[in-house]
Every structure is written in structure tokens, then in C-alpha cells.
Amino acid sequence: MSIISPRAEISPKAKIGDNCKIYPFAYIEDDVVIGDGCIIFPFVSILNGTRMGGHNKIHQGSVIAALPQDFDFQGEKTECIIGDNNIIRENVVINRATHTGGQTVIGNDNFLMEGAHISHDTKVGNQCVFGYGTKIAGDCEIGNGVIFSSSVIENAGTRVGEGAMLQAGTTFSRDVPPYIIAGGAPVAYGGVNNTICRAYGIDDKVLKHIANAYRLVFHGQTSVFDAVMQIKDQVPDSPEIQNIIRFIEGTTKGIIGKI
Image 1 (cartoon, rainbow, N blue to C red):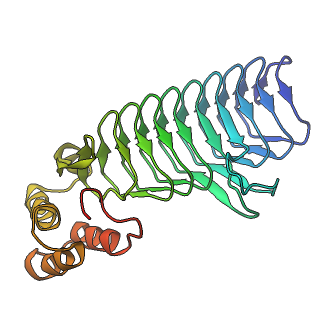
Image 2: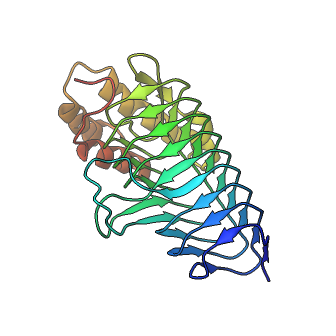
């Protein structure tokens, strides 16, 4: 049985799972689904279009499925999907999608620190960390295990590959490939993210291959296209190398630090 404060304002049409705890002054609209075991702290707003899994903790002042801050939005019915076991700290805002049938998606086991903002139609994987005041614009894609330090700004339509780390205060408008550290102004490649890669079970031999691949991309005197061809020819294959190749070949915005 869920524990719901009588001072919370919850639509009778909202669907609340078992073993939830909803504190006073939470606000939950009609078209909302909340899974089992969630904790909703005071002054949280969970708005129409929310589809939330189980065992999430939503802290004070956060807004889930806020209307998209997009001039194309005309009131369409869209969704904000939240997976399981996420921690969403104070004053986080997550917008739902813009166009009919669209979704903003947050996966599982993510940690969004105070003041983070995830904009419309962005897709976030699992086990990511969003530092204080980090802002993610609309239509972005973020892989698993990405770490954003404080006050990072990701501009619209860009991608971050799995296992990457963005240093504090970084602003970027191009794609950040997997497994790297990026930061500075202008943003640049700062090496392989060895600590996180090892935590995900990537061994030192493969880490050397990843470093060699990125040496060709960022330190070679060739185009990104030619660097990918060199990776295919010169770097021993592995799932991680294939992931790098697919990511770079799939870019439409370009790669940070490359013209």
C-alpha cells in the first residue's frame, strides 16, 4: 500500500503503483503513471505525459514532463519516459517531447543533481550522472555511463557516446565520441576515460587500442573519414572499437575538436 499525504494534490485519474510514498504539496496531473516504490518529495510537479518506472526518488522542486520550451510545440500529446531507480535531485526540470507521439526518455539508474535540465526529445541511457546546473538541449542523445560535471551545456541535436566524461563548465555543439574525456574552451579531446572504462570491465589491452584509435582521430593530419579508415586497417577489432567507428560514421554535427 502506498503512503500518500492528504495534502498532496493528485488527480484521481493518475495511476500510482504500490509502496510509493508521496509527501505533502506534491502535484500530480491526470495523464500520469508512476511505478512501484517511488518516493515523491514535497513540491514536486509530475505533469501530463509522465510514464515513470519503479523505485525512483524525485526531490523537492523538480518538474517532470514540463511543457517543451520549443517554438514548434502546439500542445500535442507527447510523453516523458522515466525508467527505474533514478535519483532526481532538487529543482531538476525534464521536458516532455514536442511533436505528437514523441518521447523524452531517461533510462535506469541515473543521477541528476540539483538544477539539471533535460530538454524535449532527448534520449538518455543508463547509469549517467548530470552534475549541478548541467543543461541538455533538445533532441540530444546520451549513451550509457556518461558523466557530466557541473555546469555543462550540451547544445541541441548533439550526441555523447557511452563512457564519456564532460569536464566542468564545458559547452559543446558537436558530438563527443565514446570513452573519452572532453573539456576546455573551445572543447577538446582530453584523453581516454580510463577510470570509467575499467569500471565497466574494459581491460588495459583494449584501452590501449581505444587510445590508438583516438590518436588517429584527434592527432592525425587527416580528415575524420580517413581516420576511421585507418582505425579499420590498423587497430585490432573489438566491440569498443566498433562502437567508436559506428559513432563517428553516424555523426551529422561533426566531432569535437575536428573541422
